[in-house]
Image (cartoon, rainbow, N blue to C red; front, side, top):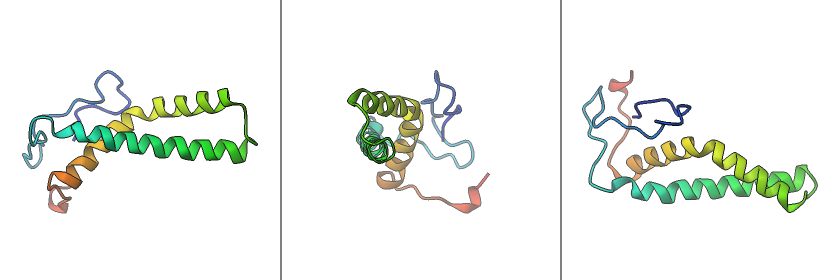
Length: 105
């Protein structure tokens, strides 16, 4: 679905116009992926809560700067993956897309 690896930080968001295998057009309508921002935000909130709870229980409630530094670092590192996963979720939930094993590469 994406043209480059998620580890390529300059082009992790690039998508081809259509699927090279089945020809499905990824841009269903103009602005379709704006809704993926909300999904990405929700995934980020889940990460913040889980990391915060983990720090609270495993590090015995460290100072606030430890929470902020750790959570911010983890969210920044996972941003390319959250971005991509949110777009995939957007296609599955609202784009009438489903996995078809006959096109598995």
